[in-house]
Image 1 (tube, rainbow, N blue to C red):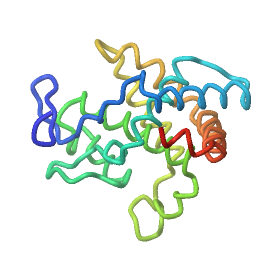
Image 2 (cartoon, rainbow, N blue to C red):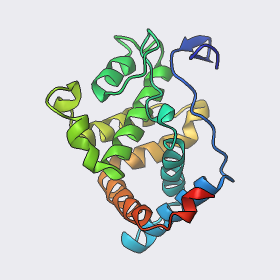
Image 3 (cartoon, rainbow, N blue to C red):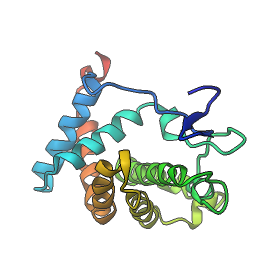
Length: 194
């Protein structure tokens, strides 16, 4: 990454690479355990690929820079799904199908994060003064994951199945993340201070 852009297949995108957090990091291990426990104990479902993907979203989104990492062509971070959709549209601002996939995957992650972990923030995110007032986060999240999953070639092949599953099971994952949030709310502070 240089100057707030990254190169992929000869194209430069005004998207910041996520701040990397290792899978060995205590925060990632905590989120992995919380997601696995919530999905297994509360929902009776367990898919290691899905739970690992969700733990990675939670870990990455501890940095707000990662939550709002999609940028427009001017380099401004996008805070609304409506604006991200313009960046994802190959007929508008997306410079390649890879950019389309990356932005749609992020929209799926973004909408699942807010609907699952912080649903109490949705009234602010979708207030009548914002463009997202017209966006159904659940429907858009499912749609964006499905679009991203269509890119099932090369390096994207292994993740395509997970993205398709997230599209089909968005509501289940959302409920599972509600349980994760409940667990997080009851964790002793010492887990977050070390």
